[in-house]
Image (cartoon, rainbow, N blue to C red; front, side):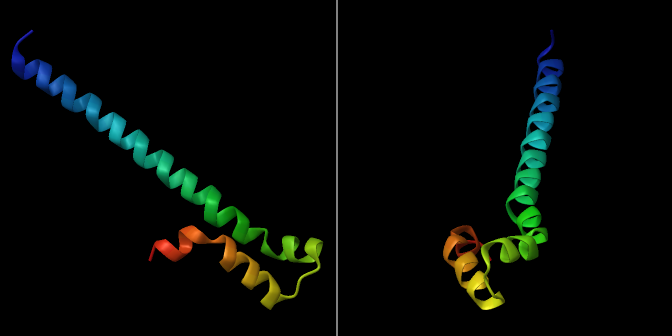
Length: 69
């Protein structure tokens, strides 16, 4: 196989790996941030917390939010 064909095949495989990694990162971000945000009211009701108590607990556990902008 000529070197150019080998490089093209390798670059194509690398693109798929990068696409898969980016997709997994975006999906994990959805599970970490968006799903708990939609369950906020239900969690507050079940734990018996008012809005300020819930926010204090959320901020204490949200280490990732403190690091990222």
